[in-house]
Length: 360
Image: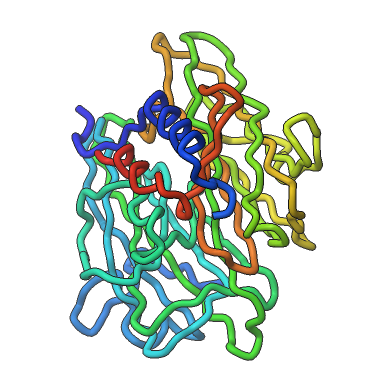
């Protein structure tokens, strides 16, 4: 039986919200670390998963999620919130994420406020994505082991004693209980090397309805780049679908009818460990351009599959790492209203309402 605290989006309701945002007059466009062993680092208080104040050695800081025993058939999203041991502001140049058995994906956030939660607790998925005053995501990982390496001179800023939130979505599809654990290790970038602040964006389309035993293609969808993001440089992109996903592709285009140039086109897409495609040099995003993206699925089940966070639902997303920072963004496109609609959060009056679709 699936855990009750499970995120489920309503794609119809979200489409209506996006339509309201457009008709309401709001401007939707302006507005290597050491992996260590499984024991992790131990703090002075014996709390597993908090670094001990030494920085993990050579400027590395590690936080662990778990361990937690997950019974067969259980799906849930649970979080820990812990402080790094850094006693001064730092820049980080890489994040190394390790996911255990039964993990679906992991999101790492830096928070501006809150209390530590050392043990995994049920939590609201994608919390604080829409309110930069509370925090913002640093990275999303779906691979069992992934190193997010920022370009030379590019880093992400962390405050002294930075609060970090690790959100893990997991499902145990086996017949036996599984011990689940995860970790994130942050590697410091020397101050003298820092030049640019990096940040993170989600882009997706919720218009998913896949008939049983059918192939389905969504897109190409086109989302214009918000005006304040013109000139940013994208250096890494990852596509995201669930178990019926067969491909995600993203192009930088001048409009919905322009085929554009590829930003994300892996030779072999794997939904459970999607490739992160790096661009060196990074791709500069000009004013007036946008993202033209497509998702494909093959639904081999006996049920119609809709948009949702559960592994039994589907998603059409990509996330991108970029600099210089203009803040983290979550953007949606839908064609369920005439002419299509776009919404980017934060920066839109309707973003507060979007949070209602994130409630478990």
